[in-house]
Length: 194
Image 1 (cartoon, rainbow, N blue to C red):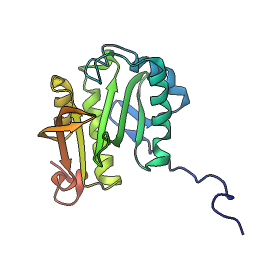
Image 2: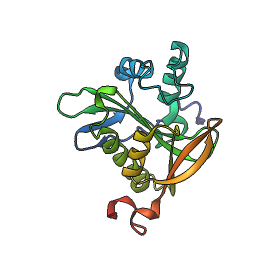
Image 3: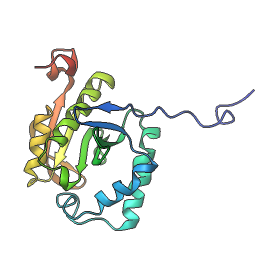
């Protein structure tokens, strides 16, 4: 008789591909890692993250390992690489993960500065929010931002999350935004909303 361990590793459900008007989102993979590393090392991108400075290379590598392994630990959650539909240019990434040490699921994103102010963050966030409520059927989703990151706060609100004041995540006091599944259309979730 074969045990589960003897049968080999379990198949990890892959993150679904998500489509936005101008981008395709697919699970972050080995071919995306150079773009991912460059994004994490960009001081402009990291201005409102952590201590406001790019992390050292060793910490970026630890993050790479963590995001690649996330779907195996938490099916349905993980990191998507976002590329433009027209030329496959790297735009950035979107993530669903547990927020710090809490049981709240958080949406996050980082985009190349060249993509800022063009609606890509809102477009991608809306697709991920729809996935959260339509496919995963989670009851609640949050987003947190540095208090001064007004652009990211606007993205979260345009994606359907409401200003919920303040929360303590990652050992810091951060702006909190939240959405509930039934806020998006009386039980039909996101597909039926406004």
